[in-house]
Length: 480
Ligand code: SF4
Ligand code: SF4
Ligand code: FES
Image (cartoon, rainbow, N blue to C red; front, side, top):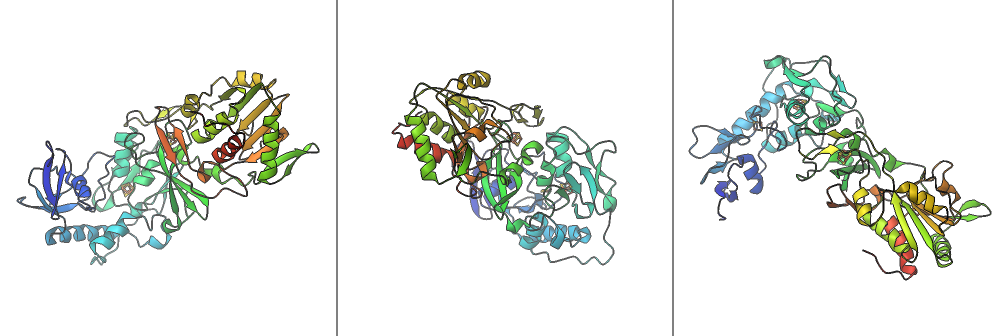
C-alpha cells in the first residue's frame, strides 16, 4: 500500500485512502454506495438524516458513514444485519409522512427516496395515523417551487444557500412533526445560483418551474456538454426528449464548477431548439437566395475563393468551436486575412462559497479559444476592413452588420432579420452546439470537449466539417 494512505476494509474489499477521508467516500472507492440523504460532497456535513448508518468493528454502536473519518485497519460492514435494520427504520419513518406522489412527481425515476427504498427493501410503514400535511406548493423563487409534503428535511437546500451561495434565506422552521423548510418572509430564492437547490434536493420537494411536467426522467437522453452561457466553461449535461433539449443540469468537475451551474446557464438552451433554422445551402440567383445542394454551394464558394486575391476578413462567433475557427482560418490562409469576434457583456455573478467560480461578465464560451487561434477583439476595425476586402466570411453571426464590396459568404444556423447575411453570395447551414462535437477553451485556458445531443435539422452540417472540406478542396494545409 502507498505511503501516507489509510488502509481499511469495506464489505470485505480493501481500500487505501488519504487521511481525513470520510467512510462514505472511501466506500465509493470500494464500489459501495452507502445510502444517504443529507450528505452531499459539495456541502458541509450535517449528519441529520441517519440514512448512512453502518457497522464498524470495535465501535460500540452503529456510526454514520458521512461524519466518520477513516482510521488505519478499520473494518466497515454496510450490509451487517443491524445496519440494514437501522436504515430500514429510517426509511419507515420517512415514509410515514411522504405522500404517494410518485405518479405525478417530476422527480420520479431519479428520486433518492425511491432508489433507497428499493435498494434497502423497506416496503412501507406500520404507522396507521394521519400523515402531516402542509400547503401543497409554495412559490420560493423565479424558478423554484417547494412541495413541503415531499420534504425529508435533509437540509441540503438550507446549507447550499447558507454556506455556498452565502445568502441564508432558507431555514428549518418549526420542530418535530411540524418542521418544514421556511423562506425569509421578505426574501425570494432569486440568487443567480439558486437553481442548484433543485438538483441538490434528493426528492421531488424542490422543483424547477421551467422543467415542470416536461418529461419523465426515463424519457430523457443525456449528453455531456459545456455551457455556452459565459467564459467559465461549466460542465453540463444536456437532457433531450425526442431530440429537443428540455433541461440543463450541472456535470461535476471539481476544477471548474464543482457540482453547480448558475441560473443563466441553466436557462441558456431554448435557442438550441429554434424552429427557424437554415436547413439547406442557399446561393444567390437573380437577386435572391435559393435553396440548393451541397455540391452547388461548395462549387460557388470555391469559385469565389479561387477568383479572389488580396484581403479577406472573418467575422466569427466566440461561441463557435475551436475546430470551426481553425477551419475558417485554414480556408482563408491563402489571403492576407484578419479575423475578429465581439463578445456580449453582462453582469458578473460569483458563487461566493466556491473559489474561481462565477457567471462571467463575458458571455461567450470560446473567446479564449478564438484569441489563441489569432482572432482579435477589434471587431470595429475588422468591420471597417471588410468594406474593401475581396472576401468576407461570417461564421454564425446572424445579426452581423457587415458591408463589403467583395464577396460575402455566411455559414450560420439562422438568418438575421434584415441582416447582412441575407445579402450573402452563399449561405452554408451549420449545426449548433447541441448538434455537433467540438472543443471550447475557457477563460483559464482549459480546453474542454462537448458532444452531440441531437441531430442537426435538414442538411445542416457541423461548421468544422463544412469549412474543413472547402479548405481541403482548395488544397490548403491545416493550420495551428
Ligand atoms: S426541500 Fe429537498 S433539499 Fe430541502 S430539506 Fe427538503 S428534501 Fe432536503
Ligand atoms: S457560470 Fe457561465 S459557464 Fe457556468 S453555468 Fe453559468 S453561464 Fe454557464
Ligand atoms: S447522510 Fe449521513 S446522516 Fe445523512
